[in-house]
Structures are given as structure tokens and as C-alpha cells.
Image 1 (cartoon, one colour):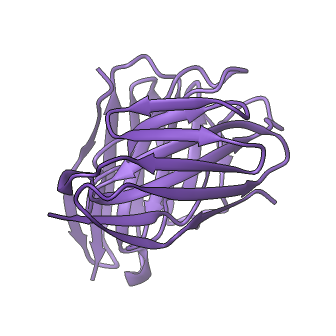
Image 2 (cartoon, one colour):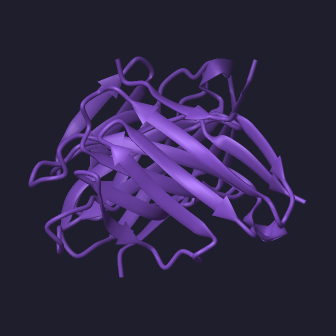
Length: 115
Length: 114
């Protein structure tokens, strides 16, 4: 099973709202990722968690706050977003982020619209 | 800085008309090159990993190849269900002990007409 699940599928929020995106995987993967994807563009890496610790932050604004409560769950907390933050937010996971190369498996994404 | 360029940006094919997609890369030591398929509004679906020049992998009508500077995704006798955006991504030599960063190309949008 190579399934990564994400909730919700769609989210509309105002600029003053606080919301969270959730991601879950049960493949025993120890690396998890958040990506942002705009229309007709490739995914852009936002954050990487390795063994539940934040290992890469691609200079993402503080209005995006990631959290990894355990090895299976990844959250992205959203606060005071701007309309330009509207995009497809993708979660991905991969095996042990050690010396071996492992493919990343993506979830279906959350379509976020900021009004 | 790692760079990945895909061409063409868009490709229109008739059903059964074979073609190839190109992914050229400039990285500081390639560790792996990945091909993904993405349908509109969905997450990318993993297709292949290639590790070294000369390697080839096949899956149904798709065949991926790798040289020292580029990778090709060959689509043989495509069907309408092969219509999607195909993404190429590379993972370069690990600098940090933790974290796996992929650098994506811009993608090739493929439309196969019946």
C-alpha cells in the first residue's frame, strides 16, 4: 500500500481565519514533506520532516506552520494567509531518509482558496 | 544550483503515435532521477527511479532512459488515458545528514487524442 491521505480535499478560508491541513501515511515512512503547487507549475518544496524533526524549511513565511505529531501524521497550520497563497497543497512521504535513495509518494492534495 | 529543464512544454499526439519527452539536468552529483505522472487537480503518481547512466526502466507503454546529462520518457503507442502532465525530478548529492530534496522540472503536458 503506497497511500498518503490528505484532508480536507478543498478548503476556502478568509485572510483572518486559522485552519489546518492534515496528512497521514501508514507505510512506515520516516520522511514527510509539504509542497505548494500553483496551476501549470511544478510542486515547490516547503518543508521536510525527517524522523519527526524539521530538517528543511525553504524560507516559508511564518503564516505557514508545520507540525509532525508522530511518524504517521503531518499537519500544516495556516494563519493570516494572503490570496496569493491559494494553491494545491501536497503532502508526500518517503522511506528512511538515510544514505539510500527513495521515491516520494504524494497524497491527492488539498485545494486551498484564500478569499 | 541544481536545474532541471523539460521539453517540450506541451505535446499533442494522436492515439498510437509514439513520442519522447526530454528532461535535461545540471546537478552537483546525481543521486537519483524520478519520473512522475500528474493528472489535473491530483497529486503526482510515482513512475520510475533511475540511478545511473545507461539505466532503463519500463512500465506498460512507458520507458525511461538516463544519460549523464538527460533522461527520456518514451511513450509507445499512446492511448487517451496516457494524457497527463509528466514531471521529472532529480535528487542531488546529499549535503545535509537529513532530508531529501527533489528539484522538479516544469513538466510536459501530454494530450493524446483518439
